[in-house]
Length: 376
Image 1 (cartoon, rainbow, N blue to C red):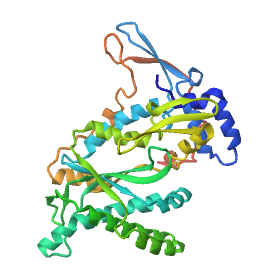
Image 2 (tube, one colour):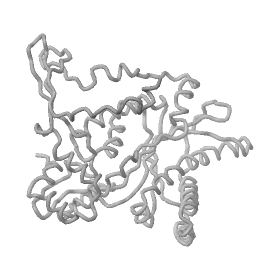
Image 3 (spheres, rainbow, N blue to C red):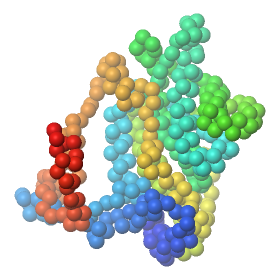
Image 4 (cartoon, helix red, strand yellow):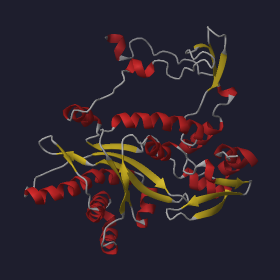
């Protein structure tokens, strides 16, 4: 039987003891996320009752938390998000590229999460520079520019739950030149990617934090071959399983429940499956496990998915039309139609909402004349 993360927090008063011990360091946001998970689908927090007029069937649904720590809500989010992403990508092959940061950056990023935004901003110019270089030499045109589409996923953890920020990117195998023509790219020089990635990251760090100049100079010498960048296999757009894999890291907790071996009031054990196939069992104290898990909750309001280049919101639809790709867009009415309404388990008809309990009371309306809509 799979051990739920929710149980580890709830049983043995683990969460209450941890919250008391860390009361001076836990943020309200982190506490709120844990509390939401613990009360997910709690009947006391509210529920809805649906009715099928044809079959006379009733269905009760308890309110879910939609939190980042909740695996049940995360599963629903992953399924929906992977479908949305498949509709957002161009119907071309993509390369899965992982941009990593050296260990010297981990403390810096942990202390200042805004550095993640700085480093994400380096990815697009790095790819444009490397993809364009081959064509600049061939065409003898130093101004040639090839812009790919990039979907970037920020991950902050490895198998062992240690803080290890890195970026998984889906990059189109090709791009658009200055004449808005599509150009295929089959070969990417990862030796060049590593050096260019290192250059942009260190220059961006030096501009963001000038007091790190000595560290920047040291890292140029310490990593003469650049920062590690590696490529996975070519990804076809129909590979839904791969997109779900990426989405899982965006929405699920940092450790899969299937990897948890045991827990009690003192320790938690789970296993790691390393890239070389070696399995390693890890045991942490309960408080150590909570520390490791909660450090990966993103800063409130911070999105972990960034769309760059051709996939920017302001560019994507233009290039879909320009390149002759079919755009499948839902209207707002289509997105809202039957959203969240269950179907009858007998006849399959969409059921009617007949009762809802637990919603907050509507707020008092503002005084007349205090908002712009009163004057329009």
